[in-house]
Structures are given as structure tokens and as C-alpha cells.
Image (cartoon, rainbow, N blue to C red; front, side, top):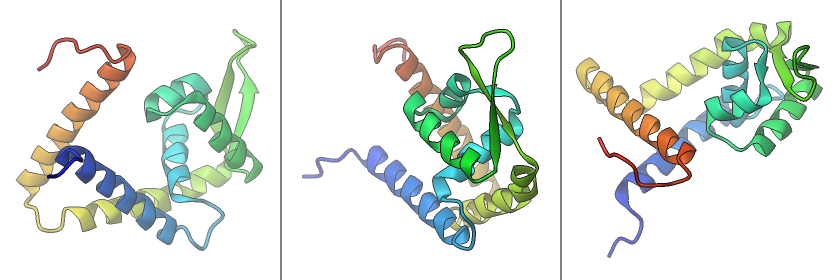
Length: 152
């Protein structure tokens, strides 16, 4: 009897594989695979608040604080207080982050290509559509306090 639901197991395997591949590809840098996602998101959303970054990445605020502290220490991001709300911290990419951006995108493209290598373009597009729907449902579920509201 398989006690781990198949979808959860497969998604965990995919995530682990991508992070391992990112770690391997970044071995010659001071970055780790998980930080790649933080940097990409900050570069695409310069001046993002730490709370918004947590929401965009689907992680806890404490994880964002820890990762942003590391990235700031490494010179990839800076933090500043929001002029309109001194309680909020805004995160900006540095030139070092923007210089690393093409490589980060390439690493993710390579990882994605490896995972989808036996799929046609149509299958890849369908997979992306389905994963986006799952991601949307996961975000709604999380935001609802885990209530079981309307299912699509």
C-alpha cells in the first residue's frame, strides 16, 4: 500500500531535483539553489516588501528574512525602510544580482529542459497550464486558512 499520495511525492521529487541541479550549477558561486528563486523574484520586483516576497514565493516570512539577510551579506540585495510605512522593509537587487540574472535564468531553463526532455511542446504547455492551476489552488487554500472552499 502506497501511503504517500502520488502527486505529493512527484512534486517533492521534482522540487528536490531542481534544487539539486541549481546547487550543482551554482557550486562555483557563493549562492545556493533556493536563493536562485529569491534573487529572480527580487530582480523582477525591485523594491518588493519582505511580506510580498513571502507571498510571491509561498514561504514563511521567517524564511524570507533569513534568506534576504544572507543575500544582503553576500552583496546581492539591499534592504531599506519603506518611506510610507517605516515598519516595512523593501528589498532591492544590487548590480551584482543583475549581473548574475542571465546565468540564473539559464540554470532554470536547463533544469526545466532536463525534466521535460521527452515531452512535445504541446505536452510542456499543458503541463505548465496544469501546474499553474495547482499552484493557484495551493495559494488559495493557504490564504483561506486551509478551508475546503469551492473546487474547480
